[in-house]
Length: 229
Image (cartoon, rainbow, N blue to C red; front, side, top):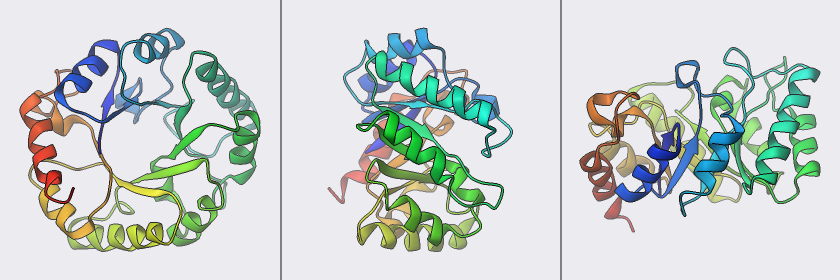
């Protein structure tokens, strides 16, 4: 599975046409991705057949949310559901750098059928193993987007391998993302063997979010992943 970041209807249609298996819909990419407008969400949901995961993030500076921000998050999720979506990308943590279970439980109580990707707030946890075990208690949390604890090189691969081993025992799928490129995806995939990968600017023309997707880049990634299918 190749998931790519999109910012609007045009990009979502292009991503599907070029072979992406799923899209993550965001706005404010310069802030790491924020909740898109309702009009954008509706237009994308109505324009593609592949799954659309909607970013739910009220600000670009913290994953530890106030009560007021949590109310906004819940309202955004409610409206996504009304628009026909059932997949969100979110990540709430506490001041102690643990999973905000209260927020997670409230979301699931409000939307029992919601499909959740826990995003890279996961990197800020005091213990990724404990965080994984916590998220594994919630069947609605289908996957975790992670760069491998912000590591580089072999340290990153080792961390991703460990997380994938956790997932093999039952729990959310590990989806490597951030920093993936045509230059490193083959080595990372051969070592990690994840089932899903998340790409941003690396599959765009000139590695720039202001440009269209590169059909050749997406197909190159798909070719790398194809040998394990």
